[in-house]
Length: 407
Image 1 (cartoon, rainbow, N blue to C red):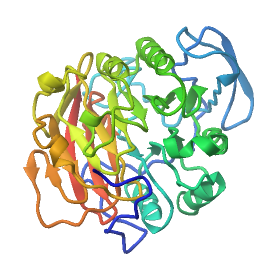
Image 2 (cartoon, rainbow, N blue to C red):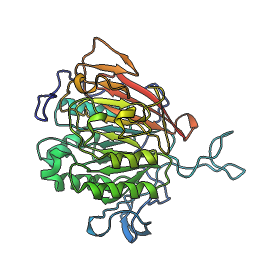
Image 3 (spheres, rainbow, N blue to C red):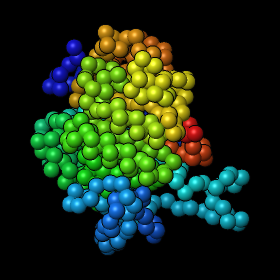
């Protein structure tokens, strides 16, 4: 059996809270929180009008939403102004010299998002925050279980001590956040109000549909808060109505086949199949380790290895094709690989636990596992259909690295 939620922190820890090296790809110096004069509401859903608050000016704006999401008092939307600029060439197209125009549904060029869960508090958690700054991430999605102490003030104060009070942060409810959820949600809403160009519709962190800098992502509390059926319908509806090039399905909980330990099936295959049908990348927390699959084409069909196909280091996403990642090494503890449950599974590309490291199909020896974060850079090399992912720990070691093509 794996360790429990109350287990002690990992055996590996950082000697410094400031990390230096990057993934070696194209790196830009983002300016989260800056804004231009154009306004955006992202791709909102719901059959009603909502008044939104501009994150830069505080002025209300009214937008019409398309059908598909929640209504009523649960709906929270905060929208600011977009960052970045678009250059128009002499022939009326956009993009760089000799390149085709960038589609309207693309992300910003070289957009870097960090994803991590299961934080806790203390030096390892703060070192992970420092890693986000060292990598120059544009924003972070926290995959639940913030501090394990039901203390939203302490969690927010520690985060702000490293990231400041305006670094773009989004979050998903975890099972250890339920008792004090209103406090955590208030902290996330306050952050959202400061993120220029960000838009989230719905019950923030529980059943919400978000866009930021051209990336679409669903923050779902499936398995933690609310009924499975409501979550399944919400996820299917917002993904069907969205037309962004890149999309993420984010959860705290996971399915046993898609993580490295002994957690049970807490999500539903139906919800994950909606993500696969849309070509949305699935990212989860809950299990305190890192685990990434190959491309999956038949999620939920274990007898067919969930339709795993292709190379470990090159993934394809698009209608009917996705992959899943658990990124649960945000600072709390590090669990072991459950070989009895997962040793004969052939859909894994990379796994990183306390006692087992598989990197793109090759077992690595002589390592000491440490905390870290998953990073995905979208729209790389001038290609809006290309992305590059990597997991880096707080020692600066690249534990996993892969390319993604949207087809």
